[in-house]
Length: 371
Image (cartoon, rainbow, N blue to C red):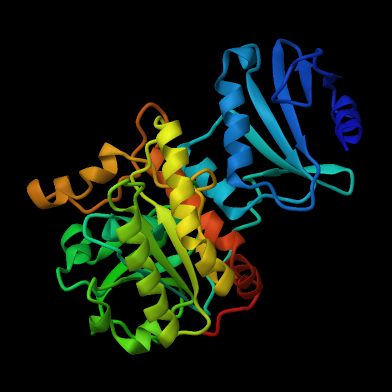
């Protein structure tokens, strides 16, 4: 495939050249006039996902890529929706995405293939807690933000007796599209305001669940397609958290036989590599038997996806509560990037890849909405 792509650019007036021995991060380079471009070609069955884009982005930011003005990432199988969401939200201007179709490179975002209406068949996600302070409400809100960036209209249902979602997000947030297309909404409701038929455009319903399991409405819990429990790699709490998570999973399973359940690590510190490895192995061992007995139970390895520690997330809501500012998520970029935004997009992508969310979105986006 690399040879075919090189030939295509040669026809368009570029001078392609293979990298020198020992070079990494790109498949060939292009030269036209004074401009040099690094090109990476992904020939694979699966679409290009967010980690592959971020790896290419890191390469272009490295000293080895200093001579390149920009990069082309070309795939024969397309790109995940989270890739486009990340490109838009992070304002990535030095990477162009292209798909090779019938010998022609189709460039994005001029023709974003993820554009389309949100699915009308709703998917329900419940976010539970194993103990206080693990970030249940923060994760509920920002996961909603990630799905909204991916083109879903999202409803957040606040089932927690403290009502923190309404305090921190008011009635909701509108996320404008960076390319002046129609944006998406996150609407915050309590359990009495939620109506299944209220908004046919809603694609994702995320419930910030009550810590007291019995206080969550059975009619909603029985509808959960996916359940998420955040925890931390805490040496003093692993055994206790593991027990509570297993107990919560069992209570969920008693009410709902079809839901998929996920454990995700929050407040992850990637700098503590040795400690993380030891604690991660302990926590994985806690859930090994549970996953074998129930294949719908998943432990998300933090090497794949985690929510990294961030002062943005720690102090989320400060401006709203203290300064009476307009509600917002902790997705603001610092130094050109937003770790929370990147992490929650990766979590949304993980859920899409390990469930039928993305398939449903594709199928229903093709179905016309009844007037």
